[in-house]
Image (cartoon, rainbow, N blue to C red; front, side):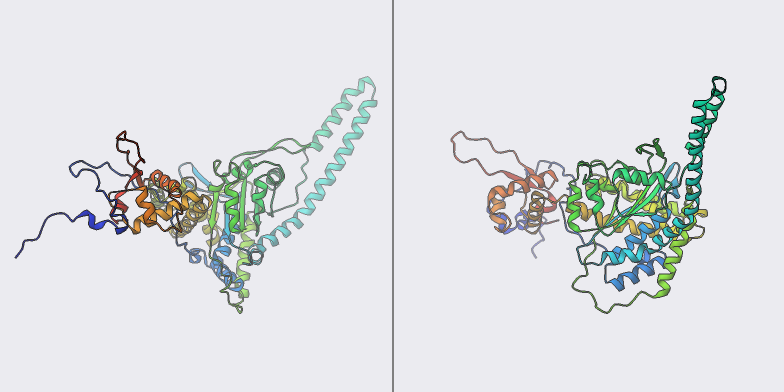
Length: 526
């Protein structure tokens, strides 16, 4: 019997036939190879998860599912709007303390990208109707207070004017006393505040009008719109330049100064802006180009959703929304909004030890994936806010689970676990969105070339000419078309360009650049 050979497999066996003509083995087997870092992914396609409706409290999830059925729209749209509606009810009125001094407000920014024809307006009307009902009630309730304040102010101003005139005409001995009376009346008039008409929701707002709304509405406002017009405003539609400071502070809860013409400056201690938006997919590309939107962190504040459109596959006889589902959703969301409407000092919700353990485990996963080469490294700005977003979502789910007393009891582990599922959902969609925002010909070409190399292992090294011979002409028409793809793959750690051999001095064409492939693709191991 012939003994089995212990000799290593011929590395040539793992080289694609497309690359064998110019193949060379890696460095001298006796020489230790230079270590490779984990390469950075290049725009890979992803399967986007569906919205986890079952992570929502029953009365919210039933409404989301029923609205999605009747309107024949992805549940992602109604689901994200339900979360935004809860944030509109609780934003600025509740905060969550995770541990130590780490607190988060509960307002969120959501943006769902869907093409035209997806009945976004119909879904918006159904999901925010309870908020508009409460807004109308609060306006009516505040009308008497406004009338009283306006009348008092008018009387005090008139009295102050009469006192001023009297002081001006008084004899020298009486003038000081009369002047004091006039000043006192003027100060009393200045101290009267006429409450603004209650507003919970705005369609869109400029930086200046949003700051005014926050000052007038007790530090909170929700922008809910089935369009993406707010991004045009942020980009400078009316001002001529991008201005996003209040939108940044309104998400983080950082103190904002409000300057209003003819009135003293005001400070909003903890501004809370909520956004629930539906946008056209191409708007994602546009907002990525807004000056400062990425660098200042605006893009990192949104929870993105890019569901698959159902247009073309919808049933024309869907099940209508059951009345009891609409009633339960409307009554509970309205009650939560009313209960929190007049609060000026936010309630602070805490976590049970078990919920904190779930949160801590999630944080550890996030941190590990932020490391170089980790799955979240390409979206580090967004992912750095992921844990805070999960804490906010957990609080919203908690308040929806206990709408009558959620601010009096801590968040439980099951609720935190449900929030982490939402966090995972939004993470995958964010990876997809930021891939799309950063799309450019070089990245697309690099991805095509990388996939080709994975499917056709080049072995230890290959030349640019080898690569050009192997790729389809439909992808790379000329050899120079490979240059940006090769450069990007080298930048991402998939390739290393080798130093050219010494020239002989006899002239002639220079050798084609040679590249060493990462072990993961060199021998078909990717």
